[in-house]
Image (cartoon, rainbow, N blue to C red):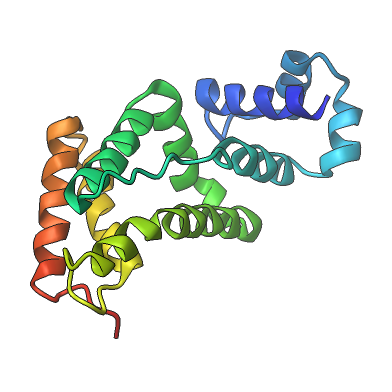
Length: 185
């Protein structure tokens, strides 16, 4: 039942967005009664928070090609592939909507990003150990610098986002790191 409700919540978020999400619609899609949802989640915000956490809890394949540029390109291209799907764009819109005004969902969003960066940090750590990046390079800052151009286009300009965008974002982040601009304070 839980998996069906969480999948139905993601489907509703994808199709209608956060503002139009109703427990009735989720219940109908999941094939359960809405009291079942309220008994387990209490509020729609808790339901959305759980659905987003579950959806994004999937393992991220962390590349280890032996070259930081190739590893980061694989990560950036994976991000682009995920965020340019209909579901990816819809869930991004949810993350930026009124949903973030609720403390619980804002906290979930923050935790999801922190978890993603933490999982990808070994790519940067290995690059420092191999001498590809300066000692003291902050993995989190490098990863944020890498994804920023992608999210900027997705959120603010609406410009196309593709593998070329991902590759350029990696090149920019690597140049900054190699210049020492992304060192830990």
